[in-house]
Image (cartoon, rainbow, N blue to C red; front, side, top):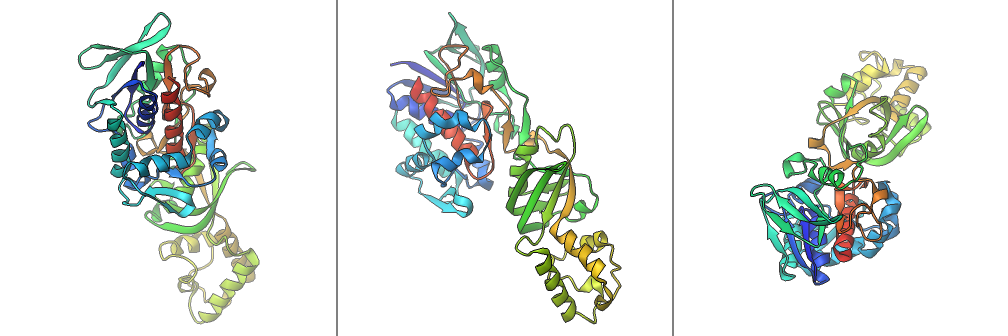
Length: 409
């Protein structure tokens, strides 16, 4: 039986603790916060989108960085395995749109509670409010940790770093794991916020603050190249755009947007071709033939969007609809099919769901999650250079890499 120390009691740390304890090891978890899984409490708007119910093979298509590295981890502990684990420990799970999996109760705390019960039943020792200052390296091996508050050393045969990244620093993700990794000889790839809202250049976007659009399709362009295209929901904010389709786009744009602005086209009516949309507008105009143009669009767009659409279309708002020309109508159709905004940057880590970048995966064994630089040191979760789109994929990375690290000790 080995003595295993896990730094961090989030998703990856709890999975690692369960994996190691099931293999008969003496496991201790050191968590800097007052409770386990603090970040889990805010995932999925407090409901915890714990994984995705897609075919396991499809998980890899939803990974943004280094998906191939996850092969052993995910097949060793799949999306169905995490559902089985939490359900077996008192947290029933349901599937929602996009195969997103949530606790039936809609309370993230029930997911953490289920994992905590499992850890306690396996005899895992949990130390809360215990930040770690350093890793002890002895004879070219990870040999324990040094606690921040007391300076006391804790000996161990293996150390698992599951400290998270930099996203949501209020939950304790302050980048400690990157420092530990560097001190152990690892490289950390460039870091940036991901699954994060965009900042936009246009002033009229600010007028749309609070407007949520459903059943739209966004396309993000880098010059003539399509970076991201997705159908779903989005939201206008006081600084730009957010919402599910936009957050996923940010992961593909994070590295590029530091160098150059990007264009995002919003198709407000993706179910209609331009011809069908033109016919629809003609029908609306026909019904409103005695009205002014500004009063003829309420069947087509939400009220908040109408003034911006009128302004951008260049059509005189006072004009009678029967005087709107075919050329003007074409402008309105084109605008509806491609409402463009200029993306100039990303919001910060305090709004980012995950961190892109991290410990270079080339320096970690994908079959065990053990460091190739230092024996007895393992990594799990967001501290690694791994990330996926929204929909439960990032938590799956944490569960799978954590379980593999714990079982491999």
